[in-house]
Image (cartoon, rainbow, N blue to C red):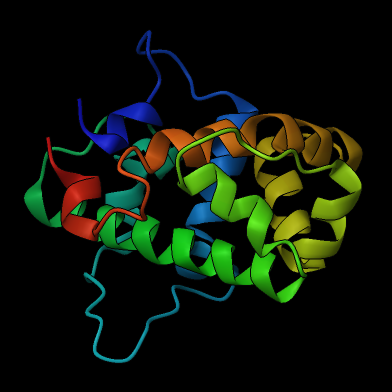
Length: 171
């Protein structure tokens, strides 16, 4: 099972709002309003939105949730998730919550995060984007993320580190 499969719907049905929120949070820098952002030297495929529609990230755009099969699509989504995971770690560290997020990545027990903590760690733009895409209210979103995000990050970092884009995109 690839790491992308962890975030794909198990039954072939729609992605849950909280899974959409986690994906949106990890993909934030690539899907935020105003277009995809890029790091220096990072190539963004021309049909980004179409690629995302046909991936587990499709629900962020109201599209399909099929698993990506195209190598370029899988590779781009893998890079997006790797960068997003690193950005999330930096946000936690900047808010003084580095040990919390690091406990989710490393071995051992996951430290909890509260909805109140997340309201201080995540930007207002991130929260607004996620509430709009998921249909969840702010409080419901933050509460759900506080319950599900630690395990999701733990599941996405099985070797105690942030996987590379290639590792995220392996079939």
